[in-house]
Image (cartoon, rainbow, N blue to C red; front, side):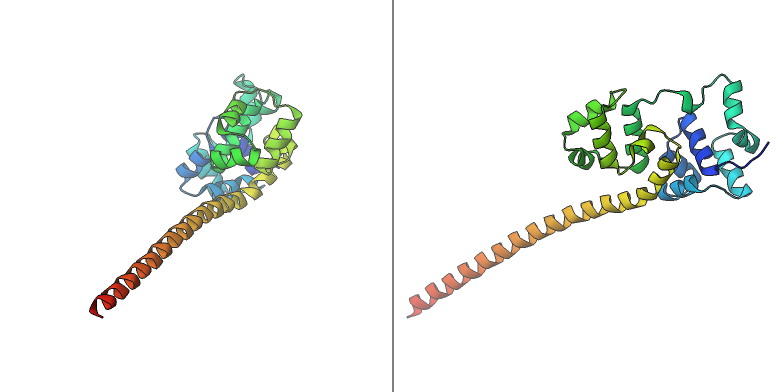
Length: 207
């Protein structure tokens, strides 16, 4: 059998069917979430790397290559034939990317409560799908078809999204520091005025 498969996509497919989150896989492998997505984007990998990953997810390299056949033999449906639950897909992407739910809700233009309601929806309307895709910076095709070419491109944005999350956090901390600095400056100015007033009063008494 030809082994010309996209190794990263196959790994992602197996993780999904085994219900192993990418962040958990990264932790078990001893590297960051970004590095995990790097491997999922690669079409090929070294034999030693493959063996290490197979050991982590408790399968043999042969099972890795023949995974779709193994799934059928075991009575499991390939992921492509299953109906994608849109709400669960949204939660999966949030978890994979480590997104801040409050900030994501703001991007979606809705409250956290309304966003949580989306998690229970099996199918999104066209407007909801478009809004969610834009907020996640993913194409509708990538959202609806995990493991597709468009979905693998999403991983390219993960590092950018992580950096953006850090930027927002730093921006909030910066704004807080500015407010603190402004309050401290005002307090110092007030103390200077009071000190100056006390000096004037002291001089007037001497006079």
